Every structure is written in structure tokens, then in C-alpha cells.
Amino acid sequence: MQFHALDRYQTGDSFLHRLDPRVKVIGAVAIILATVLLPDGAWLAFLLTWLLLLALSYATGLGWDYAVKRSFVVLPFLLAAVTVMFSLPGRPLLGIQLGPWQLILTDTGLIRFSSILIRSLLAVQAAILLVAATRFPDLMHALRHLHLPAVLVAIVSFMVRYLTVLGDEVKRLLRAREARSAAVTGQRAGGTWVWRAQVAGNMVGQLFLRSYERSDRLYQAMLARGYQGEWPTSNAHQMARRDWLALFMLLLLLLFIQLIGRL
Amino acid sequence: MFVLSIALMHIPDGFLSVTISAVLWVLTAVTLAIAIRRSQDQFDERLAPLAGIMAAFIFAAQMINFPVAGGTSGHLLGGALAAIVLGPWVGILVMTCVIGVQGLLFQDGGLLVMGANIFNMGIVTALVGYGLYRAANGRSETVKLITAGVAAWLSVMAAALMTSLELWLSGTVALGIVVPAMLGVHAFIGLGEALITVAALAFIFRVRPDLLGDSEAKGSRVWIVGGALLTLAVVLLAPFASASPDGLERVAEDVGFLGTAVAAPYEVLPDYTIPFIGSENLSTIIAGAVGVIIVAALALYLVRLTRRSAPRS
Figure 1 (cartoon, rainbow over the protein chains, first blue to last red):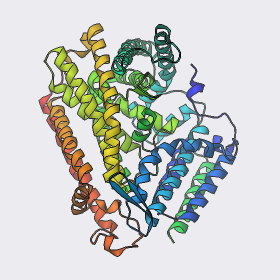
Figure 2 (cartoon, rainbow over the protein chains, first blue to last red):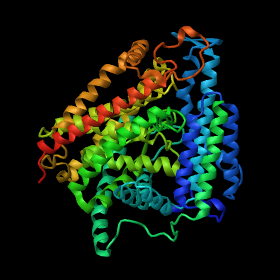
Figure 3 (cartoon, chains in turn red, purple):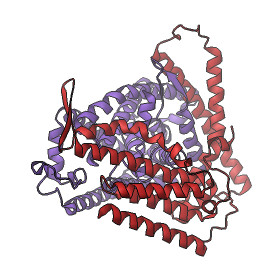
Figure 4 (cartoon, rainbow over the protein chains, first blue to last red):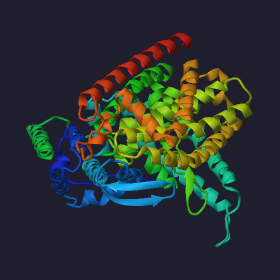
């Protein structure tokens, strides 16, 4: 398995790709924060934020709908939020009898639910664009510059490096289990689900020991090569005037949208 | 079912209010600062490769699934297992990195709410999972394994309850429906978690018992107390929240914390607005600040305690 298989970075040389990663991290968090701060039912402000995100998506050179298409990952979580439609006091729109519960859909509840849906979709698009236009080592450097503890950055770097290695290890374990588990098509597979969970548990234990022993070897290799705790990057990591300008413009725009949403 | 559970544990951005996200980020940051210091004391420069590979291990172990029924499958979440085999502090660091990477690289969980996600799936699970397991220190292997299973199950339940409460305090869900639903689903998810955790531990006991020896009692007795208290809170709070959500709402009202939940400026029915919180964000902010200060003081006190009761070798 290659890291590319996991990495969501899209090669490119757009304006967003060339922006300092710090600006991109702060920008993404600012967009998310501004979106979450918008009050319920601020439709115009939601629309403006979305237009901003579409423009940014277009600016990555990946097409205007790149982030939109990938933003639906948040939808399963909405299942929990559905309940808010029936719990807020407001003008009743619809009554549903569900077992012991009498559910009353209210206009306030509906507005709240739609707002949550829109906020989560917008926020995740900002995060998608961030990783699509920023290489992983640059992202880590940016977080380091933003004073995330060095040891956390080092752990995450090691983790991402070994994700693929252990991912391959898991694939081998799964293949071995598959090879030893003959099943007749159309018939139930053998064993109870408790037994199957125990088999999975044994595999997890196996994987743990292999990983633990690997970390020993890694430490020795690290000592042998004088590892400094950070990955090299070709990015200069110097804030140019262009970076400051982009950040300033973005924050100004978000402030403007915030005003529109609250007036 | 498991797809649902994973989605329901990793809260995306937009589902928690800014206040709740901020309070949980502060709690998480304070805990992380302590965890980093304690782990570095214990492992020094070995920490990064060990915790890095262990984080990758948890991530990869979550891919090992087993069929349950009707096309659904279960798998490990790993919070309790990580805390048991690595000690609570390294366990918290490992889970933090797993959740961080899932959120940052794979959009599995939001960025602004990452503090909450780390708190639920990393810190709460470590406290419950490790705290209870640590209580069986020095007992026979069977007792340890049974305790680990119970601890793993409870850790999932505690995380699910925390998630529900945070969502409710943010005004995103209806308490009376979500708590029973979340806990109901996670009672099954937790069974899978318990079985895998126990089987994995039993495997490690057979092959490398030295890694789980009593001599390596990582963390101190404070964890037992903390874990027991949190478990007690879950056991008491969950039925209460399910059976009488109004009761819990009343408590939150009295504490002055529900302001974040009902901050919606729509006062369609004036009867429903809460008099002293309804429009006043100030009380929310003050309550939040007081909470943060209390928790920070508690955390500092805990650190003192751990320092005193667990002299480092």
C-alpha cells in the first residue's frame, strides 16, 4: 500500500497550492468557526459562504464541485440531529405518533435542523479543500509553526508513515483469515458472532505485538540515523506579502458574511 | 450498524455550539499537556516512535472487522485497549493522534469539535477503561480479563453518553430520544469492543506476558478513583437522562448551562423561553468560565496527587 492511496492531497500548482500552509490552516479553521457562529436561518450568509467555498474549490484547479462531492460524509451523523426537529418549541407543522412518543414537527425545529445540515456541509468542505491543496509534511510544519507541541507532530508523522505499513499487515491478516474460512455460498458462515469477535481480537493482539516490536526496531534505526523529529519539506515556510494579503482578504470576507448573517 | 456507530462517535463540525466546542477544547488541551509531560518523563525520546506506531496500530486495528448479522459488522474502537496496554497517558496521546488524523486527513470528525471528539473517544475511554482495569491489579489473569471486558464495554457507553450530552447542550438533539438511542446502539457496539479487547489481551498474556505485568503499573491509584467516579456517573446519569429528560434539563437550567442549547433567538412561544438564561449569553459564558476554572484546578490537583503517590523510578 502506498501513502498516496490514503492521502487526499491532489497534485497541483494553483494559487491555493502555493499559499503558505499556515494561511491555509488558519483560513480553514476561520471559515469553519465563522460558519458555526452564523445564527439559525441565516440563509443569505450560508449562501455567500458556500459561494466562497465554491470559488476556493475552483481556485484549487480541481473543479468547482470537488469539495461539494466529497462533503456528504457528514450525512450519517444527521440521524442524531433529526430529533431536534421535534424538540424545539415553535409553531407546530406536523404531528407524528411513533410508538410511545408523540412527535410534533415545529417550524423552529425545522429551521434549526436545516441550519445544522448546512453548517456541517459547509464546514467539511473547508476541511476537504485544506487537505486537497496542502501536502502532508507541509501541514505538519504549519501546525508546528502554530505551536502545536513538537512531540505530537512527531507522533503524527510517525503514525502516518506507518499507517500504510500496518495497513498492509492488516491486509495480510485478513487474507489469511479469508483463506482459512471456507464458506458455502448462500449458507450462513460458521461460528457464533462471539467466536468471530474473538478471532478478530486474536488478530488485533497479533497486530499489536508486531507493531510493538516494530517500534523497538524503529527506535534503534532512529538512533542510528540521527532523526531530528521532523520531516524535511521543500516549502520555504516564509510568509510572503501574498500570504498576508490572502489571509486578510479571507478574514474580511468572513466578517462581512457574519455581519450579513446577523443583521 | 457499525458504520452508524463510527459516524455517531466522530462528531462533524456544525453539530456542537462554539461554547461547548471551546470548553471541551480547553479540557482536552489541559489533559493533553499533562499527558505529554508524563509520557515524556516515562519514555523520553522513545515516545515518538512508540506512540506513533501504536497510533498507526489502533488505526489499522479498526480495519479488522468481523461479521455480526444481516450484513453489519463490528470492529474495535480501541480507547480502552490502548490505555490498558500502554498506560493511560500514552493511551490518551495515541488516541489523540488517531482522532486528529481521522479528522484532519479523512474528514472523519470535525476540526473545531476535535477537542470534544478527543475528549469522548480518547480521554473518557482511557479514564473508564484504564481506571477499572487498574483496580484488578495483582489479581489473577481471569479476573483481569473479565475486568478489562467490563471496562471496555463501559468505556464505549461513557463515550456515547458524553457525545449525546454534548450534542444536547449544543441544542442539536432531543435528549429524551438521543440518550436511549445512542446507548441502545452502543450497548451492542460495546459488546464487540469488550470481546475484541479481551481476546487481544488474552493473546498478549499468552505471548508476551511481560508487557502486561503488574510491575509495570502505569499511572497511579487516582485513575482507579477517577474511572470509578466516571463509571458511577454514567451508570446513574444514563437511566436518569433516558427516563426523565426534563429532570436533567431542569438541572442544566439551574446550573445555568443550558443557555447554549436554547440560544436560538426565536421566541415563538414566549412561555417556552427560560427567564434568566433565554437571551442572556453572559450567564452561559460565566458558567462556562467557572466550569473551566474548576476543572483546571481539579486537573492540577490530580497532577499533584499523582506526583506524590507514584514516585518515578
